[in-house]
Amino acid sequence: STAPPPMLVGFALTPPPPIARPCGVALTPRCGSPHASGLLRRLRSPEVSLVAGGSLLLALVVNRLATEELLNSQSRADLIATVGPVLLMLDGLSNLAITPAEPEPVSLAGGVAVDWLDPVVSGDASRELAWATDALGAGLGASSVAIWRAGGGTLAARGLLTPRAAASPAAAVVPGPLLQKCAGSAAGAPEYLPALQLLPGRVEFSYFPEATQALLMVPLGGRSGVVVLGADRKRAFGAEDVAWARAIAGRLGAALEGGDAAE
Image 1 (tube, rainbow, N blue to C red):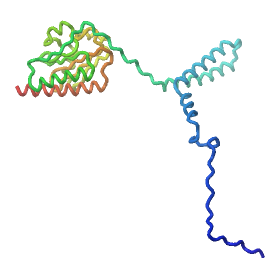
Image 2: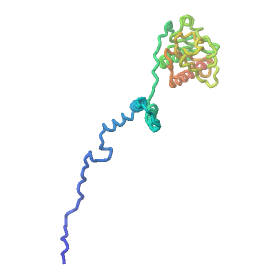
Image 3: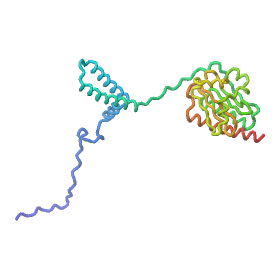
């Protein structure tokens, strides 16, 4: 009979070390070249889709025009082949980020710089009025600021006004239908005219320079009054600007109410 193999004592069998797989053999994307992924992203860009789709459509049109005898089968094939380029172009248009050009500021010729506060307003209300005009003019980039209150006329004017309004700032703001509508708004909603030059109602704001491009009206909180802001470019005030103007107008209205109560 065959004798059993001798027992090995004191030796441990350890598994062999793993064999490193060459990068070229690996099937996982971890070892892939970053240039390949970058190339794939560029190929999937909207610009490439638009160019590729337009080129294929142009090739189909040229091929159809160059064919002397059109068969029904070719017409059907051309119709089917048009689907691919059209889908490519639609995909490119849907992924294309189109941002409107930022409007350029215009020169407000004929405007006179004014920095005026109603001397009748005194104490804390006067300080709040001065702070509000500074914050609205500097913080929002408004070229013209006017604050009007029913029964009190113009409370403040800062920035550019017409020469006639600048000569008598206390009577600069003449309330028209749009201003009175904003002042009487129960919800305190602002009125924003992003392209003032396109509206016939711009004649109401004749105290601002004629070339004023955008206008924002914000009711005073708790008061029958309005903060009127003018800008030298279209769409000058964004959503954050409107919210900031409403906050300042609400604070100013409360300060003016407190000043009236103190008197």
